[in-house]
Image 1: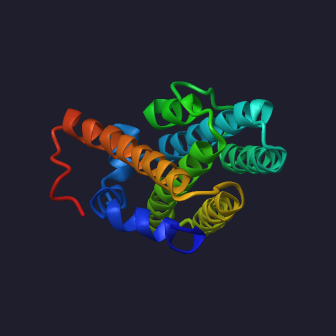
Image 2: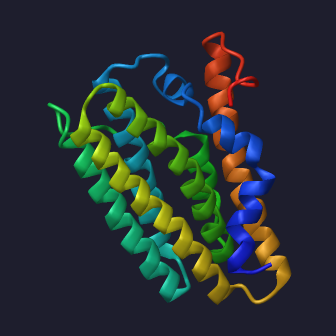
Length: 210
């Protein structure tokens, strides 16, 4: 395996989970069915803050200097994402809250290749989240906010692409690629599990939602 087919192989193996995470019910799950603009924005901001704090921890202790700089760059980008979302709120501060199971998994990773694989998985999850945020604000007739989330979606997808490229620089054998792929799949599976559990708590079956 190499950088050319790494991300495609993850998307192929996790098709069901990613398709369901791309459902219109995703924001229902993330907001506990409170689809007000304020709650949606706060939920999005909290997600960006969790990513920022995960990357801050990685940028502090990563041993590969090139990858450490990449994590620091992404941390700053996620901070910018957080600021851009909170600027749309009357109260421009959103507490960290519970980082959630996906970021708990990411923060437990120590190996460089595992972290890069985790970033790829997180970017694929975030792509579906941003798509639903765009759709939400399109339906609200709010072009400015929809465009903001389009920009965030593009930037976060680029994080996954660059993490995949960096894997090609630091992974020296097929076992490392497979470990990184397993981590990416685990991250997606954990995000999907949290989504499914939230819908189940609301009395909704996630299985037919595609």
